[in-house]
Image (cartoon, rainbow, N blue to C red; front, side):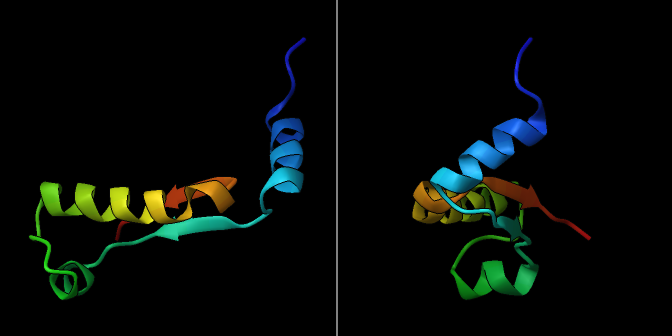
Length: 65
């Protein structure tokens, strides 16, 4: 039987961090970073954040309102 989500999370949380990073790139944030307010800007923002934090993350939660 394969490990459950909880088991996988607890193992990774011990190795990295128990925190979940919420990514919510608003139009103002995209503009402040010099990125366009459309899907390409959103993709670039998420890629930059993930590259910067990937070694310390266990979970990422994309957010959009």
